[in-house]
Amino acid sequence: MKIFVIDDEEAVLKDMVRTVEEAVNDTGVVSFTRCSDALDEAERGCRPDVVFTDIEMPGLSGLEFAVKLKAVSPNTRIIFVTAYEQYAIRAFKIKAHGYLLKPLTADDVRDELKYCPEGHELPVTVAKEDDNRLKIQCFGYFEIYCHGKPVMFERNQTKELLAYLVDRRGAACTTGQIALALWEEDVDKRAVQQRIRNLISDLRKTLRSIGMEDVIIREHRQLAIRKEMTDCDYYRMLEGDMDALNAYHGEYMKDYSWAELTNANLLK
Image (cartoon, rainbow, N blue to C red):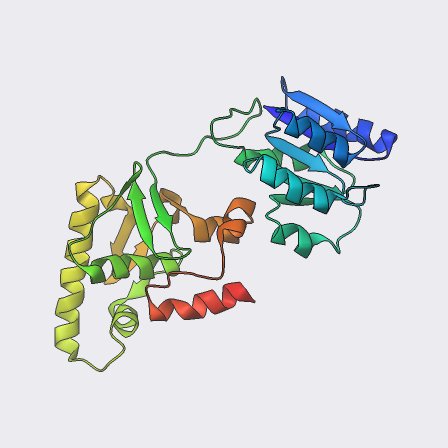
């Protein structure tokens, strides 16, 4: 893994480099006092996996540098390290992966490097992602994947039922709550109960076919999802994952009208 560290103050730069090397063993750390020099290095083919950079820099600022670097090396993770909070919104708008306040600590570095570029192994103690989890995409259209392949549902409303459980974030749902979300119009109560039973049966059958039946909890006539068995962009965003935050473009489960309330809360 190659890491760039940039700051125009020599003493601060030395501290940042020392901190990064303390947090990450056996990695290549290259330091610069000017963003323009780091950009030149990247344009010559030395593409960093991660960059820790100050924002207020002489000549090319950290924000301007990030925009130019993304054009050259789009997969580089850019993490701003600054003494000022007012740049946070602008930093996130240009797809920065992190925003840290000085002084930088080794724990800060470790936390940011938990989500390293795909294909790179970090020499820090980081739990690997569980490949057996159900991958869930909530941003844009709702999609489900297992082992890299899309999960197919016989009924559209079976998929919608799963989407609603995901939206509830592990909270138990009654059949009444499910009915209200899936069928906004008044329907016969007995007919609704049968519909829901059919959907639950179909959902369990689909999940059983991919070895993921345990992702659903059914107790006391209530239904819930086991969050720990999923890799969900919505959940990761709520946990502060910058990749997930940057992947959200104002659209959440746009297949379903009941998801508009959650989307409105995310837009706040």
